[in-house]
Image (cartoon, protein in one colour):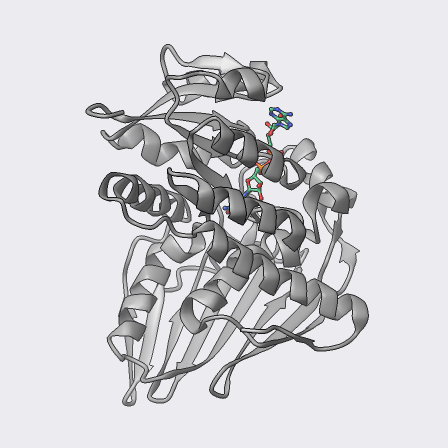
Length: 356
Ligand SMILES: NC(=O)c1ccc[n+]([C@@H]2O[C@H](COP(=O)([O-])OP(=O)(O)OC[C@H]3O[C@@H](n4cnc5c(N)ncnc54)[C@H](O)[C@@H]3O)[C@@H](O)[C@H]2O)c1
């Protein structure tokens, strides 16, 4: 890696790996050299689909991590395997990018934060939503004072159906249905991580969290933790909420998961709307600003894959410049704490207070 590209190895070539490889393939400063999956046939098929030549394919994580030619390990495994794989990658001296949520619970997260902070190479918790171009634009506008001081953030997750969405293998749904493998519900804890990360990104850490979490039948006999409402308070009299509604008969446009995500940030002077995420409800503009009696639309790239591309591009630059990954392990723990508080609140029927 000294002078050449950063050599990347990917563990887990399941559903989401297709979006993770995009920037590693396109960026001259990276080269995918090895894949690891217990399903080696799938890994070999993906290597061919991605146009990778001469990559090693391993079924065993230990043999994969023993490869000296890998500089950076991208971990795309079910959640119960995150801690073990990340600790091993750190022990093997690798740069690490670990998918969200970092671990099953805060006890595991503490172990990982300690190992990450003692490691002399970067460890990133991969969170892509805050790199989604409409979110980057909204953040730029907030930082420029476009809506004054932000007072509230409202986030809506709206899974539905989509003829255009990609196919999610039954195996990827199965482990998400089991708490000992997923750590929490598919919408509040797993996908919800992105929404808690967005709330944290714009408003900082919440101090109080209260949640109702529902239960309903999802696609193909799965259970979904909807309809759900999570509300929170931030310091200085600021608030937010995440509303999760499953609309089984609503058709939307998506090339990835059949879900729409909308965000509304209200400030002392105006309101910002982010009008999409995974999918879209029609041809809405990606970002809309209301201020001083006028509406302004901002047209930025809005394909959801862009969020992965920008997140990885940022990390590759941070590795070269000695910059901080986004998220750090400690930040990843903060998001996990936020999501876990929602689950705890719903289970115990009370408000959870989070110390700063
Ligand atoms: N950032 C996002 O928007 C986003 C979206 C989807 C998934 N994710 C995250 O990505 C990760 C993977 O999710 P997915 O949907 O791709 O899951 P998946 O089930 O499709 O893929 C997991 C892969 O891990 C492999 N695997 C399991 N055990 C293994 C072992 N012992 N050794 C080697 N390989 C093993 C499986 O064969 C499978 O190919 C999860 O952490 C998930 O939360 C993030």
